[in-house]
Length: 172
Image: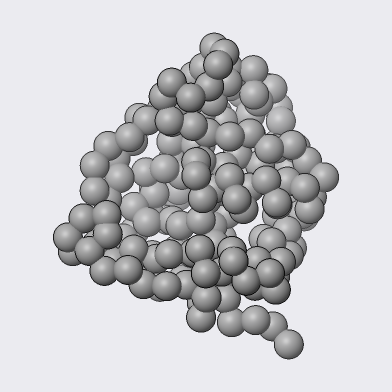
């Protein structure tokens, strides 16, 4: 029987700012059966797209991204905050629902023509996802999908990914 993954998501009001309802995926990750099922469902969608790389942003994107890359037998590339990577980087700055941020990846992390799925725990306004798309394309990679555990549909993030194959396991 399938696990109701949405039942494993905890709502936290007024985090990180007043008026924001944060969707906390940590109870899902802490539940071994729910975490396994979430990775299996992500892999079911991602597998047919034959990615070479999963690109996940820190920090929660690392949790799902590394596990998904392992399940699919492909590589994982971390997108990190500035100053966290030790070698030459490329970067993209983007707007969040509560501020601005920048992500960097190593300049040699994605080769021209590599097939990449950008993955994150939550699709909100689409800022982080669109920044990851820009990083992939800046290096000549091909975005074959944008994949999320949770989508907050009322924030319209999917519109920023128009033209890209996008999917979320849970939609609010």
